[in-house]
Amino acid sequence: MQIATPYLMFLGDVPDTLAAKTAYGINDWRPEWCVGQLRMEGCAADLGIPDLTLTQAVGRGCRTMVIGVANAGGVLPEHWVAEIVAGLEAGLDVASGLHVRLGSIPAIAEAAERTGRALHDVRHSSETFPTGKGTKRPGLRLLTVGTDCSVGKKYTALALEKGMRARGLDADFRATGQTGVFISGRGVAIDAVVADFISGAVEWVSPAADPRHWDLIEGQGSLFHPSFAGVSLGLLHGAQADAFVVCHEPTRTRMRGVEARLPTIQQVIDLTVQLGRLTNPDIRPVGIAVNTQGLPEPRARALLEEAVAAHGLPATDPVRFGVEGILDRLAAEFPA
Image 1: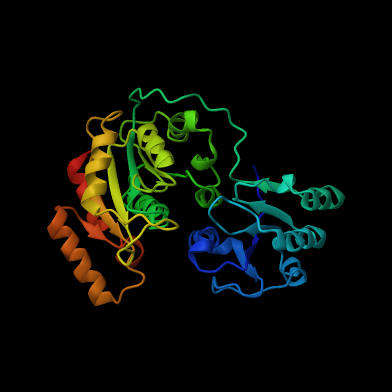
Image 2: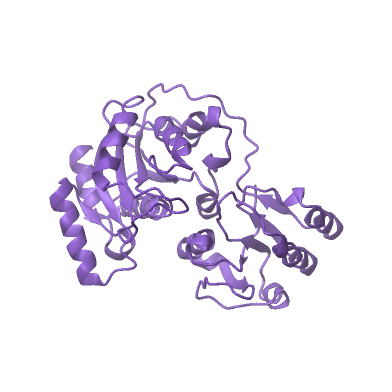
C-alpha cells in the first residue's frame, strides 16, 4: 500500500482530541507530511496546523486526504460522506484507518471510480496470517501495555525506538494499529484481524531477527478493558515479549467508553506477567510511562517519583521527559 504524501488531515466534527488521535499521531511523528487540516463545524480537535479548504489543500500540493479519526467501532458518520466525495472530486486520494471500508459506501466508491482516485483502507491488510504458534524466535521484543485505551502506548514505543537508535542500538518500531501503520509505512492493524489469527499476525509483524535486535511492539487496548481485552491478550501472546512498559493516564478513574473502573499499574504488571509467561516465561516489566499532559510539571514529576517508589521501576512521561531511565534499565536487564 503506497499512500501519496503530503496529507490533508480530515478531522470531521469529532467531539474531543482523543477521537482524532490518528491525526495527532501522524502530525506529531510525521509533521513534514501534514500540510493542513479540514474541520467541520463543531470539531473540538485542532492539530495546530493551517485550516484549509479542499482547493487550498490541492494548491499547496496535498495528494491524500487522511481521515484522521479513531472512534468506537471504526464507523464513518453518514454526514462525512459528502466531504470525502468532494475531496475525491478535488483531486485527492483518500486514506482511512476506520473499520468500515471506504469502497463499501456507494457514493464514495462511485466518486473514486469516476475521478480515478485511490482509496486506501489502512486497517485492512491483504496478508493471510497463520495461527500463532508460540515458538520462541530469535531477537528481543518489548511490548507497551496499558491501564486503558489511548494512554500513550504508541508514543512510548516510538520514543523508545528513537532513544535506542540514538544509543546505536538496532531497534525497530512495529505498528499494530492504523495510526502506527500511517507513521511507519508498515505493520498491521491487529484489531481488524480475525480473532483466531491475532497472535499469528503479531508473530508476522515481529519476525525472527538478530539475537541483539529489539522490536518495539505497539500495544493495543488493555487486558482489563471489557471491549478490547481479547485483542490485547492475542497481541501479548504473539509478541512473546521479553520486556514490557506499562502506560498510564493518571487523571482517569474509569476506562474509556465503558463503566469499568481503571485498574492499578500493579494490577496490569501482575496480569501481564501471569498471562505473558505462556509464550515467554522470562517476561518482565522494565518501566512505567505516564501521560502527564494534563498535569502541571511539579505535579507530574511528583507523580513519577511516587510510581518509582511504589513499583521499583523507572517512570517517565516519554514525550515530556524522555525515556533515558527506561533505556538504562533495559541495558542492565539485557546486557549486550
